[in-house]
Length: 144
Image (cartoon, rainbow, N blue to C red; front, side):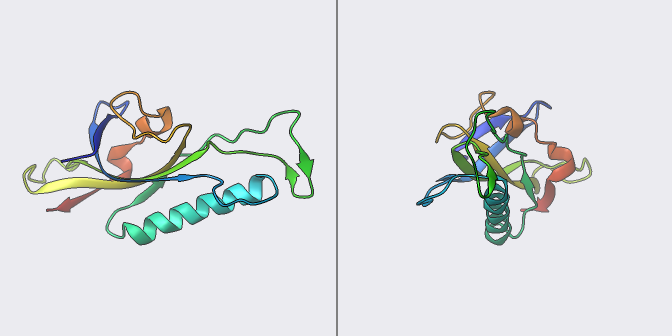
């Protein structure tokens, strides 16, 4: 039984089997968020997803990067922040390839995305970037 079901903008429904939420800047004791730090955070999440879900392709939903005009600019450049919650989710859906038996095959995709609140995505209320995932292009069919 899935944790929740998300409806993509394509109309396909995908089931969330596992979800990992973390504070984007959890453990940051000093300094400020900036582009290079954010790039490293994203790379680390992608590596975590690839190592954890080895049988599934991994996709990053490009996160919004907030860089206010009056933002602090320090030694590492201007302040740039990502949404406060980093998410890694393992999703499954019906098979993509029409020749695959719908009883024996499912499609899988691991998605990394950022959101504003620590809640599981659901239905059509999920973040727009997550709902816009091009499932048919990114996911992979696997036999059960």
